[in-house]
Length: 366
Image 1 (cartoon, rainbow, N blue to C red):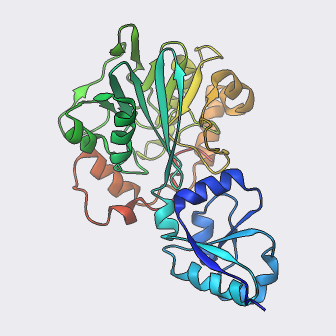
Image 2 (image 1 turned 90 degrees about the horizontal axis):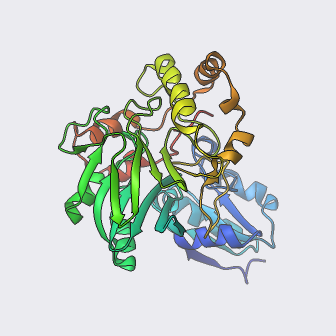
């Protein structure tokens, strides 16, 4: 038994394709249960390594099995156990550490501009390159700036502007690093406490990419998640909502320790700035949670009208909304205080950046 079973390595990029195309994939997470509960790959099933020999019957013998752990060692041991029981498997190379830095890209045309959505699968982070003619801008870049440079090169675009939608608490912003690489203009909200040089955003500013094609700062302040949360609009076709509005919820108001006041601000931002827009406008958020399905080649985005119909919280009166928001905020993002200090410019990025960012984003109200 087990003589014909095999063990191979699988890259995180290959896993993205497999999850999207193969309904018979079985992702076996062999980490301890507390590690799994905190953060996992979509559809993964947890059987801790020290229980696997006794529970191997729970692993389907006909499935395409992928074993996962934090960095790969326990997953390899799990695959050896499976091999001894006649089950072939592949080990996710680099484990959850590699999954945290795995991206895929989807693009489409909106109002004569090309929108490229970069999805950081392990963090649920979304960022954007928007280009027309020879120019492009970037919204909410991560530290992996090579991805944005690659997109620009592919389309023969020059990155002229880099923007964040808000002061991020779940991951390190790559805005300053991308500006250093490209010479682009860094544009941020003056309402968030950044300590380095930038060009302040103002309501109504249009960043022209090509004649007649530009991104408008529809609201420099949609406070609630942070005081400087900013909304960007691409003609009447798309809005980039940062952490103000997600596909499955709204942004949490508690990370600045002023939850009740920020919840009132968030309600007003949604009802005065976002919800008056057309049902047909496409909502592009900065994150997505585990309840959002992500497929290769399909935007993580929805028309505003669909969100009106599927998010009951958007129909609440202000007092009800605030009560709901305060009652449902849960665990904060891992290491969020240190991440905020770095993104503000009050601390420097250190060599343990990958460890600082590990874990889910937790920026939405559950």
